[in-house]
Every structure is written in C-alpha cells, then in structure tokens.
Length: 507
Image 1 (cartoon, rainbow, N blue to C red):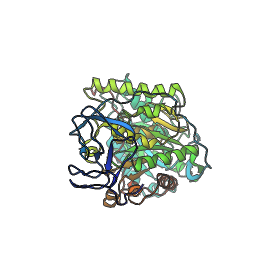
Image 2: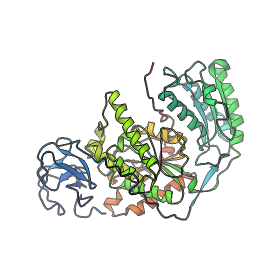
Image 3: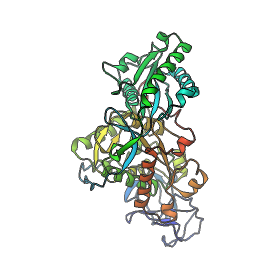
C-alpha cells in the first residue's frame, strides 16, 4: 500500500468514499477517483467517490460509518457538515468468525520472575496511596528515596514510583465505584512490574487500608508494607518511616535480576489516542498484526475503551470463543448505554475535536479503526475494569475512552507493557509499565520524533506492509520488555497518569 502518484486510497471495494492522503485542492483530479474534486479536502479526510443521496449510508472499511445529512455529490468533501450518525450493525453473530490462529515458535525476553509465576518488564518499588490525602506524603517519600544514594544506587531497581490519585474518600463505601477503586489499587499492588509495594493511607478515609490489605497477603512475595499518616505521627514521621521501609524492600527486590522468559508471559495493553484518518489504515492494523503474533506465541493482549468500540462491537462478538464471552461484551455495551444516558451523555459524543480535525467524523468510523488494534485472533475473555486477566490470548477489558484512565485499568488487570497509537501526537507514559508510541503518519512522526518510537506512516509513503510493520512492533515490544527504555521513559513520563475510574457521586 503506497502513496505513489495517486494521493487517495480506497480501503474496501464496497466503500463509497476514498481517503485523501495529501491536502488536495478544489479541481484536483486524482487518477484513482476518476472525477474532479468539488472543493478542497485536507489529508486524512473523506471524499465521496459516487453521488450519495440524503439518508443514504456512507461506507468505509466495508462498514457503515454514518448517514448522509444532505445530498452529497461525487467529488465532495465528507465530514461533520454532511455526515451524521446512522444505523449500524447489531448482528452480533457470536462466535461465527472465531478461528484459532496457528501457533508460532515462542520468542524470549529478559524479565523479572515473580513468586506467583508472572514476569515483569520493570522492577520498581511503588508507594501506593489509598486516598488523595496521602498523595503528597507518598511523593515526599519517593523523592527522598531517589535522593538517597544508597537506595537509588541499588542494582536491578528501576526507581521509586508514587501512585497517587484524587479519590478514596468523599465516596460511598458500598457501591460499584468503591469496588472498582478497590480492584484498581489491589491490581497495582500485584502488578509484576513492582518488586515491592508500600501502601500509605491517611487513616480516616472511606477506602480503609485494612480493607485493602484484607485477610491474606496483598503480594505473593510478601514484599509489602503499609502505614497510615495519622498512626505514624504525621508527615515527617511518615516520610522517615517510609524511607526505612523502602530500604528493607529494596534490599529484597534488588536480589531479583533479569532472566530469560517466554513472550507468553507478556501482558500488553493496546491503546490509541489522538486518532486521525490514518489510524485505521496504518498504526492500528499494524498493532493488530503484532497482537496476533504475540497471541500466536502464547502471550496476552488487552483491547479496551468501550465508548470507542461502540458501533464496531459486532466485529468482536463474532470472534468470541463462546456465547458467554460474546454476551459479556454485549452486557458491557448495554451498561454503557445506560451509564451515559443517566449522566446526560451519549455514546456517540466522540470523536474529539482533534479526531475530527484529523478526518474522523462519527464514533462508528472511529470505532471501526480502533478495533483494528485487536488483530484477528479469537476473543478469549471479557473483563471489567481492573479485573485480573487470567486467560492468555486476545482479551477485552471494559474502560472509558479517556486514555490515562483506560491504561490505568489495563495495568491494574496485569498489563506489563502498553503500546499506544496516535495520529495527532499524544504524549504520556504509564509507570510502572513502559509505553511504546506508534505514529500513524510520517508528517507527525517527523515533527515529534523525540516522542514517537515507531513511524507507521511509511505503510503509505513507502509501501511497507502491515505484516512487516507488525513484526517491527513486536521486535520493539521484546526489546523494551527486556530493559531498553521507550522514548516516553527517556523523557520521564509516568508520574501523573494514574487515573482510577470514578463511578458515582463525589460526596
């Protein structure tokens, strides 16, 4: 697939639109279109390849992406001014396209082996907070640890990460929001990228530290401690006590060195943000191919962002390995329809202004491109936000479309790597799990090369195949999992992107 001399592309023979691969002026006559453009069309945007009557469906990827709001002549620009939401498929046909992919020889990475059989890609010590009120003290403890030469110089330790947030109190202690936060905090405590966890609370919050710790050990390796600021004696006393505890935990964690592990031990979150009209053509399908390769080697990948698969969920239910799995996804869609309705929102309130500027018009169009990140492997499990993922293969975890929140859930569910596609140029990182950024277009990649690990725009500009780009992404995943820093890590991202999903009233 190469730009060549013709600056347009038709993605499916059934489409009644083509995509501009460059800024096109009114009067331009692309050879593959066979007609003259009525108006200028920005790159990444849609052009009517035939006349489309008012009320007629507009088709991209061979799927409905909306309905014409007015008569659209051939050669016209199609976007928010003349395309709106329309009917979309709810023919879920559960399992009808679920076909196992052939196994591939398993590759290895160098990781940190944990007591429960998980393998981490990093070896951080985390300072986890039960409530916003202990957030500053957690940061103070982490800063003191980084300044301590003995601590910061310990071998095999990647650093000290304060996990702070803005909730944990002012909430009900018996509802779905409480349960979700509980799962999230416990999931972070157990993530394989942490070699030890110190839990810090205030003492009087709704999310009580004893409830989080529970009856058993929160971590199977036992490298876990907890304290509250009120019981310890205030800020300075808690910093001193926390620093002492970190020294003890770091001594234990530093004894674990990287060792070979099969990539079947990797758990990779698939994300996109700042999408554009190229996302569903380049980076997303390339990441989907990499996801398939990992699954074929026994690994686990996680697709999420339920509002951003809306209208394309039928492509996932058809790949479900069982009726139970397919129905779990449909139940999550119905939950979201109710959730948005009772909060005065709509499921089709996407795309964002940046998405629209990049050429995406409706949530149906955005969702069809987003689902491509999940490749073609069977869907083996559907999980709630931050629910532990215990089935290897291609999975789905329910989450909002808000990237930091969605990634937070994926890491809490066990994600030890994040791969993130972007067309507009999202910048972020997600400690303790390294994040690899994929650019959807070459122009943005050139402009933001210090933030983008891989350029997928060359799929269009240079004719690189989806398969070759997917293999390149897998190579990068293995290299970063083995200790090579991603660019977001080099830049220091990851300290502010822990965003638990707040469901329910703040009281």
